[in-house]
Length: 222
Image 1: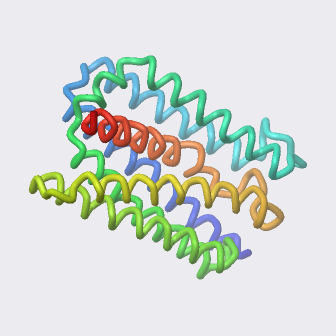
Image 2 (image 1 turned 90 degrees about the horizontal axis):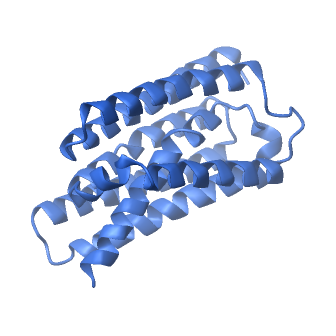
């Protein structure tokens, strides 16, 4: 693995996290969140990005010999904890008032996640087959999300089917990629690879968006 290529793709994944931070702040604005809520979310996000950069760039806090299975459990547990915090915070009420099409537009940004991981495959930063699979899932999810957003905006009769499709593929994407990282390519990546930047920020936001979107779909069918 070329150090320059790795550094370049690290900057890209950091940029992806920043893009999703800005997109989430946009959603908070649409949901008429208070200035305090937006400020706290923004500051905590920036602090967290600096923290995970420190951890992954210095190989700190996480045991260097942690197994893929242990990392899998840790990652899912951490994500569940963050989602619980979101659910019981003012964010839940704000996101409940955000229209589906806006949430799907932000999901469409996953094409940039795909670009990053496809570049990593080309540059031999991650295994090429894993890069192709990751890129395919993210591009497909991003495309379906944008199609669903258009359908909702135009009040198309197929909007709910498209929303379900986008959410199911998107969740399958996250679960498949995380599982593959921890069990199929763990020896190639490990706990401190730059893919973890996205796992520990953007992926959690995506899970939250899926949760909100699916909750809205379930309510609309009652």
